[in-house]
Image 1 (cartoon, rainbow, N blue to C red):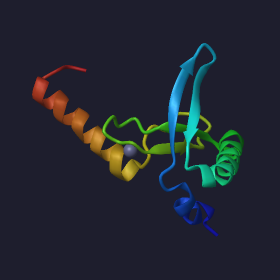
Image 2 (tube, protein in one colour):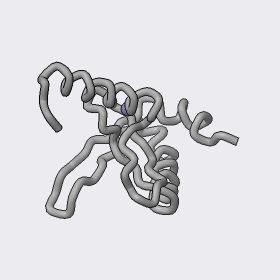
Image 3 (tube, helix red, strand yellow):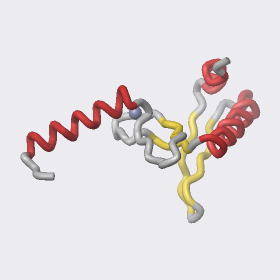
Image 4 (cartoon, rainbow, N blue to C red):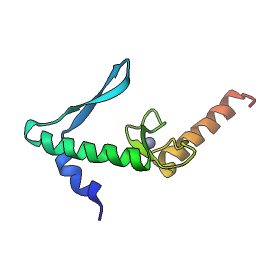
Length: 104
Ligand SMILES: [Zn+2]
C-alpha cells in the first residue's frame, strides 16, 4: 500500500516551524488540537523511517518547497525530483554559464 497518500487528510493544515538552538535545528509542530496526537504519531513514524532508510532534506532548488528522502549511500541527492528540479536547475546553470561567458 501507500501509507503516505492516506495520511494526507490527517496532515492537512499541519505545519512545522524550524527552531534553531545550540543543538541544531528542531521542528516545532503546529497542528489542530484535535489531531495533534495522531499527527505526532505520524511524525514519529516518519522520523523513524528517516533514520532507518534515508535522510530528509529540503530540495536544493530554492524555488521548491518540497523535501527529498536521500537513500543514496553517497548522501548526495539534492532534488525532490531529478525529472523536475534536477533538470531545471541543470538547465539554468548551463544557461548562466553560456550567458556570462564564464570559463569553468
Ligand atoms: Zn524540488
